[in-house]
Image (cartoon, rainbow, N blue to C red; front, side, top):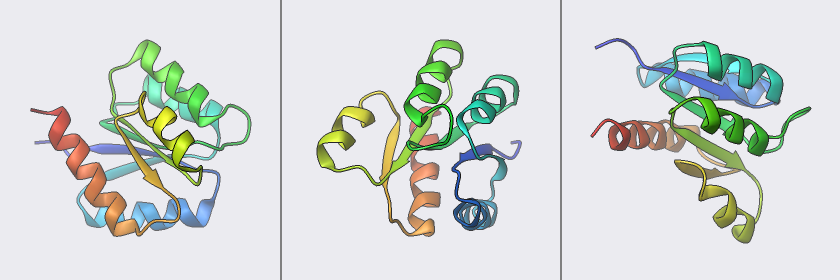
Length: 121
């Protein structure tokens, strides 16, 4: 089986680097974007297995990116955000998962693995 590719989308470079480390250690290959436009390009034209997507991004928001992905591709999308509980419920309805910031990077890797396992059944 080929290595699964995860797109990490967050404007915080140190956070992307931390997530990259944990996901690579968990056996994934990563691709990264720091804004919504780059995320859309990568999500539409790269071979990806999952998108780990921050909600608050420069340019296009993570919600816009999620909607654009949903129109064109069938890729699991896990949202990351510091938003409160009410917003969390509303946003998570369109996503395959939701991770609230702050989080433990190990938990993110485990969540990614669980979502991918659910999607391949």
